[in-house]
Length: 140
Image (cartoon, rainbow, N blue to C red; front, side, top):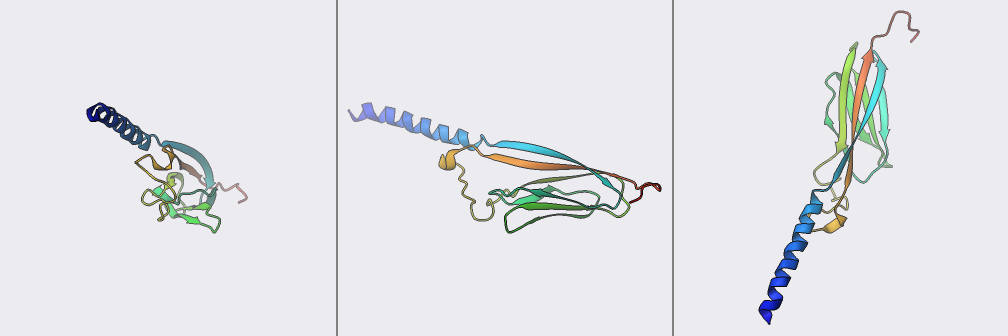
């Protein structure tokens, strides 16, 4: 009688473990591309609405005097960018969540063993910056 219950119990456990492992890999990544047009030596800032995860620059600008993210008391993330002095051309910055530790405290997220309900959505911000020269006739 024990053997009759043992095999179905093992099959049920294997199915449960396999189901949990699949959910760990079903996270969704959404990339938001933000096109920015600046004049030479002009600064730019963008506020990313508050979320559960801390944000960081994952791909740094190649032609920046200033390129950084800060977080305010409301947990909004602010990107600040100033191109290198007199630089004209294109630049790009990627901002995404900090991968390790989710804000340093676990962030309420659980991976593996079916904790936390499985699917998560991560938003990555890609800033494509075009810097144009200031013409002699431009009043700025």
